[in-house]
Length: 259
Image (cartoon, rainbow, N blue to C red; front, top):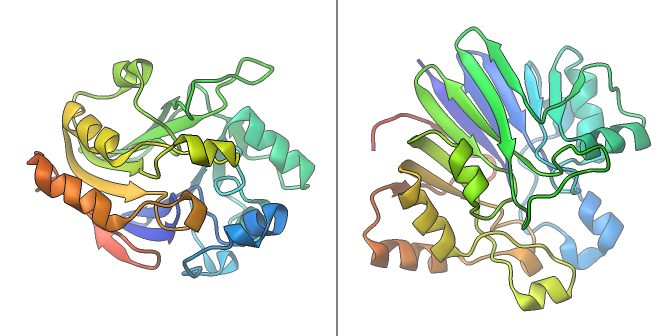
């Protein structure tokens, strides 16, 4: 079995499992800065043009915020991957309709159970920072559990720890891709919705029996970032039972069960 992950930046990744490709939350434009101002220009370069991404089987969208459901990225991505299945929230579907993106293969994925050969994907609720529902009672924020043979990946998109999420997760997780960009009073005053603090994320990983942690959402926007050194300091002080991995945009690594 060969499972490789290619980092796109923010919370975006391509998982390549024996040529079966899953892409999640690709943000490969400056749409956020265009909409809200240059203070939200990306600190990292786009590692790839979305029009050059090919052979995608599944597109996963966790929620409708612009850095997770980006029409400027999705338009060329969908054009080059017409047979890809798209799963996302009802609010993401609204974005597709607003921007004239093709909806034929879009499925609202509140209770997603997708399987293909040795790949299984299911959706669970996320809390950003609360569990919320659309006007049709669909979850506004979703995470995904991906099983590639016996390897379990958890990608919540944007979330904080929550009892309901714990109840839906497996007893152990091989790789968790968790957003560590700290919500606080000053960010919320500016309209920025943060996620976990470093302490929350590290403690949650221990509680969830995670083997490998990949921090996400910490490196893209200066007003909504976290220092790598801060996370590393607390990780080293905590004597945690999992490994931490930094996958920078444009980097690809192989995912295994072994610590």
